Amino acid sequence: MPQGRLTSVPVRRPDRLVLLDRIARAFEPGVRYTEPELNTVLCRFSADLVVLRRSLMDEGFLEHDRTHYWRCGGTVDL
Image 1 (tube, helix red, strand yellow):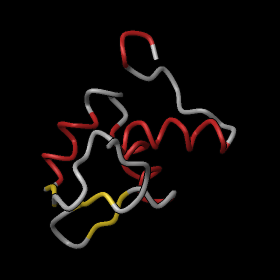
Image 2 (spheres, rainbow, N blue to C red; image 1 turned 90 degrees about the horizontal axis):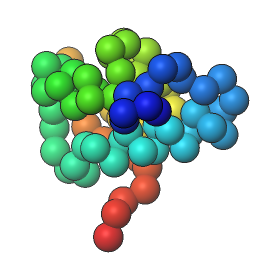
Image 3 (cartoon, rainbow, N blue to C red; image 1 turned 60 degrees about the horizontal axis):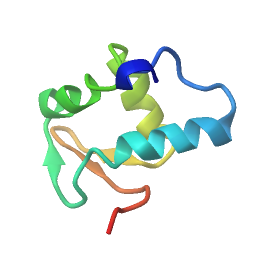
């Protein structure tokens, strides 16, 4: 990630999970985010917000309902 931004999402699942875990740590556990708030955080990592959002949800790092997203997986810094 040159200068902290992605140039591509890894194809190999183990590598992708490490990357997604790092991105998931940018979200506070227990906090609900609107889509614009979620996108603001994801913009720090890549311009391709759709791929990041979908990958985080598909791999169990984020959940959502009609109006909010929240972190539901990943490691927690103590």
